[in-house]
Length: 316
Ligand SMILES: Nc1ncnc2c1ncn2[C@@H]1O[C@H](COP(=O)(O)OP(=O)(O)OP(=O)(O)O)[C@@H](O)[C@H]1O
Ligand SMILES: [Mg+2]
Image 1 (tube, rainbow, N blue to C red):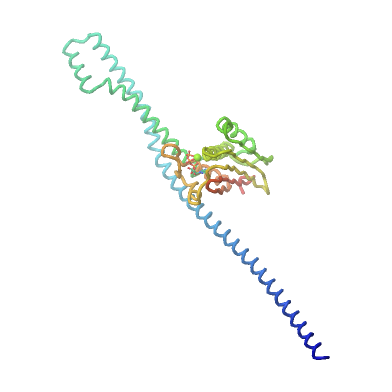
Image 2 (image 1 turned 90 degrees about the vertical axis):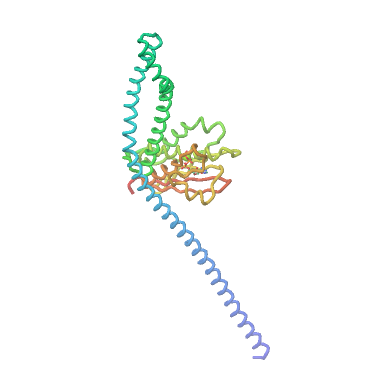
């Protein structure tokens, strides 16, 4: 072999070995990149699971707390409401007495000393004003108590301490009837897009699930108040013994901090007096009571999607 040929052979061998090494390096880098991506994904999933677990734990604690508070408030509330009823009757009797006194006074049918005495009492105690004001005080107090009773009922719902009657029901019918109830409120401005597959009958409390749909749709409507071309997308489908319902809007959306708190009882971003902040807590309570899962994804200024996953059997 001439020196040239030997040199060429060595060069060829070296080039082949270099190419093989380069290929190996590229393959390994690719593999490493893929593994790194998998690791990142797993890490993200773990973080998501962890925050979901924390959220569920927090809500479970709040549920226990709410059940206790609801129970504690419920007992005194029951007797206050019942006492109010009795007081209304008593006041009615006193009013009759006052009316009669006024009538006698007007007809001047009392001896003058007694009439003067009665007039002094009427003036000093401002009894005519008290009679008028009592009516208003009673109405306001009763309204307040009824509101309180609603809050207690909501808290009990959130902590799923209410008996929930189960039946086989078609959730499509529930969704449609809820949409009908809201039709007049939604249809004038908001476009509702439905992609609803036929669903297997679910073992559930249909009334409670209708309340879930109603609360989610009302929230979506409220989030769309300032949106141009406002839209709600409702989809329902079933996969492997699971029903998946999504209610999505292209409304104001939420930042990450808000998103984390939406299921907390009494969390609201609405002005005082406009929302109790119990809507989504009730939704959460009902869905977990049905062994389901609810999650939310949202982007500020873009919209929000609530996803509900319910087991068809209701007991899994
Ligand atoms: N679709 C949505 N888009 C944007 N924000 C939402 C949406 N749904 C809920 N939220 C946010 O979550 C908060 C809590 O909602 P939730 O239904 O529990 O109470 P609320 O609507 O404020 O009061 P209530 O339901 O008692 O009238 C809302 O105040 C709002 O900030
Ligand atoms: Mg609400």
